[in-house]
Image (cartoon, rainbow, N blue to C red; front, side, top):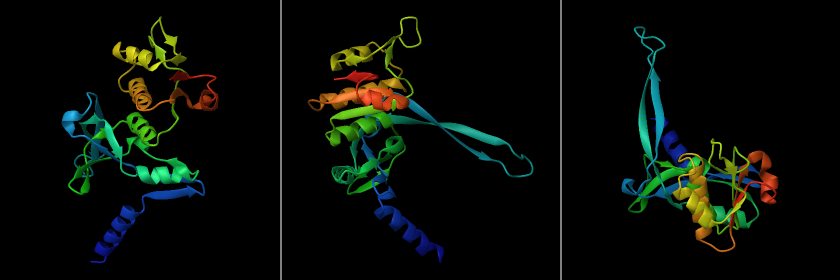
Length: 219
């Protein structure tokens, strides 16, 4: 059939085109993230909603859905890290690990897709570790990380140490699916190198945060 060669060509194109050029200085890479099997996954589950629309005349316009829960995994590696390093070393702006990347498991010499979720903050932190970055900056919706969040004792954090960050983690000060992954990724990044810094702030305060005029700084 004529469709078969077309599908093969498309598959071959996707296989070998690991990045798209968005501009002369910006690259977007599909990021394949290796992870451990299910017994090494993290506690939180992410629900994904699947559904379909009934098109028969008997039940027009009805929508049926069910929930599938996927467990969150710690990223073990980034398949395209050498490409990311090469582009970064040439002064290019690289956009990678979007949404946590595409989860894969190594089976022999091949990579196979997996039904899993790679938390984007953990993936970003892992990429910063592998690149031996000096600064890991996380942009979110709040200017500062807070302890006692949404209580009368709410207090913004400005400069804290790794030990203090770990203490707040142990106290359960951070929401599991929002701020906690950011703090844990930052702590992991700092523990694996010297002279590093983590900055967490809102996207509209990115420049001030980078200049250490605002935000939460962990070092």
